[in-house]
Length: 185
Ligand SMILES: [Zn+2]
Image: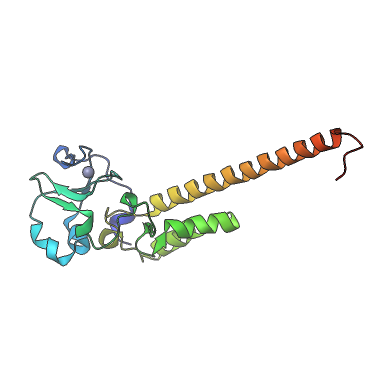
């Protein structure tokens, strides 16, 4: 198994905690291997020796940045960066091609999603390649589980809405019955 799926290190060095010059938030340090694998070839020449970070701000167009001011934006990356996209396809897992929509449809349809279990099994087999497939360079399992939770919460919300409208129908029916024997149905 590659070490991309191990728990993140305890303490990050101070110089690793650089802020994105575009949005001002602190990104996550990312390996040069990840950047080299995911940048479009024409942007590779912009990458130099500095420490890079991955910007996790959904609305920020910058994907990678370095302390020296280098910024690499969404359009310079080969893949769609899931956390910065709101329109389909929004990748959730890069190694095994799972999208937010697939998880959503699974849960809306059957109430469950097999995505995280399937990915966990693949990871166990050593088949994940997050450091060269996922723009964050990290394991997608956490993100996939979040997506499953969001979809499940949405489904519960929908079920509650259905239950509420059923409750309303029963109330309506009761009102109709109260409206007297003359009423023709
Ligand atoms: Zn940013």
